[in-house]
Image (cartoon, rainbow, N blue to C red; front, side, top):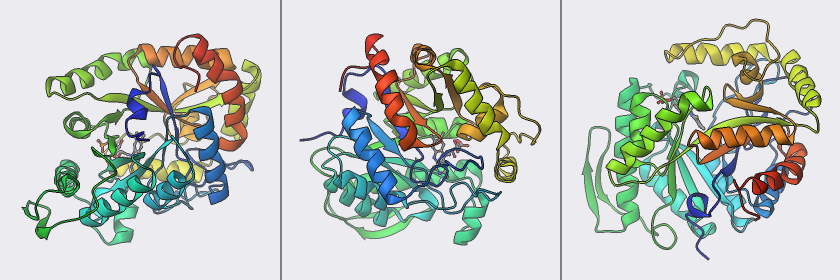
Length: 372
Ligand SMILES: Cc1cc2nc3c(=O)[nH]c(=O)nc-3n(C[C@H](O)[C@H](O)[C@H](O)COP(=O)(O)O)c2cc1C
């Protein structure tokens, strides 16, 4: 049965994905003994649990190198197209994304790999296009990093080549700025009709416009839900004016415990073990990209402190509390116009069962989700 658009159209007002489980430590930068061990066995068990409880999708991080420090977050990571193929073969309805770096994957190779994955999943593959930002990764590949907006210009050529191949029309030549290709063809096309869902997480103007023009989903950064509402509405409006529908999602770090105190205590425990070496390295990389650098300093134990956010969820919005508080926060995010949240836990497998037992039924009660 075709599932291609289940993530977008399954009737849930607030969709949920799991973000970052293909990488060691996931999204958490702390030296916790229980930090995520991204083994295949753990990923498989997680995907099958997500499938069973009706989580819509899994979104991997494309990382080629760890972030150093004591725990070296993401130092071990499964390559995301191969990872997606394995999980798609072992699940029934979960949408599994791959995350593909435009400058590191030739579009002809990527188009065929993704079409293969889409057949394995019978239309359940999705693609997150990333244009790259991490200087160290570019250097490791011997590829020089292009100026910011040129990376997205290359991304547009890349995506138009991939979709032209997937359209399955006649052999074609491509004469662009970044690609000059002759006699291009590639079969099979993706499974059934239509292309895999495509998301993009560019937060700059250029990155966001890439999403408005081309993506089914835009992953945007959220400072507070209320402060983001206007931008989210505008993204959707700008896409609609171009005849397209787009969903807006954001990543969210979760600590959910039976009482608010237990959740706060766990945040404090994480913050006390923040991996400053890795956080500092990431800050340096962001500074090279012209993004604000947050200097290591004593963390304040609050979900809203930017440094606490960094230790738990690499700078994303965080939701910390008992199940009722989590539902209140999710309602707030939905009211801001968000269609979906890509969540992470410190220990995905250890924490998802509690989330499933306590939070999902409450989300059903308030009408944000229906029983799976
Ligand atoms: C949800 C999400 C997932 C992302 N995944 C990756 C990734 O796997 N690999 C990567 O190099 N960058 C990743 N990024 C970074 C974005 O692709 C983008 O470069 C970043 O948000 C900065 O935006 P800009 O490129 O428009 O300046 C991700 C960002 C977000 C918010």
